Length: 261
Image 1 (cartoon, rainbow, N blue to C red):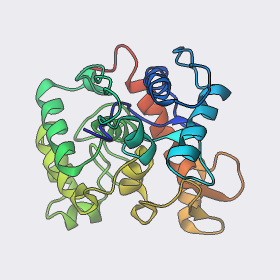
Image 2: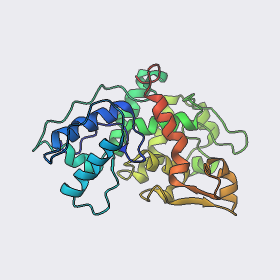
Image 3: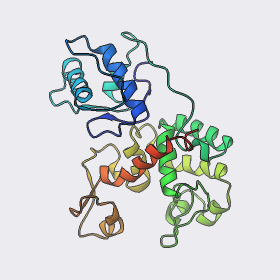
Image 4: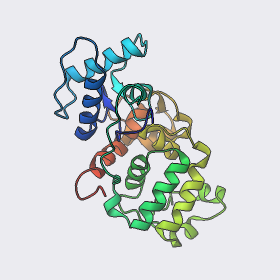
């Protein structure tokens, strides 16, 4: 299937660049580069040659005048690279997902089914929940300041909007609470194509679909003060990329041995 997700997250300029993903993209680039470029070493390192090859593909075949040099899951560059009319698609590595080793088989199976319905990569949602729950995946973990509770830290007002309460959510099993995770994410179905957008659905839904440079919070404001810890460069603005950086770090960790499963 064209555009099938054969990588977990972005590869290239400003990408996550997990070595396993980089190797897949390097192989795809080698299969598609009919222009006179040397074949890339399948070393899992996203260096200048790999980024140059991505941009070359984007300029020549995608008619991009300002190629970003990045391959995103579900994006047009990956769609082109995996077009079965030209090449064979590399098989996905395994059925394992990020943080899958830290939850029950029942939880994992239900999560994957929910993600299929929502059109979101399960690795993204698992990483967001790992961040929000402090890697506990506990339905009762609670923020003592805000009262936010559970897998995606449901705020009391959010719980009320879902016809429940944080107390009821905390009393559920993690598997049962997934029903409310799905209910929460359902309004954003089909729009969560990146890990940034997946996390924005939790943190700041207004940013879904915006560029990663989009400013979510700026000083002076209460919203900025509450999220100032995300302002990596200290410029008084929290961009979408900065806001999602810690979740992307959870994705990288969750795909390592001992966590992936």
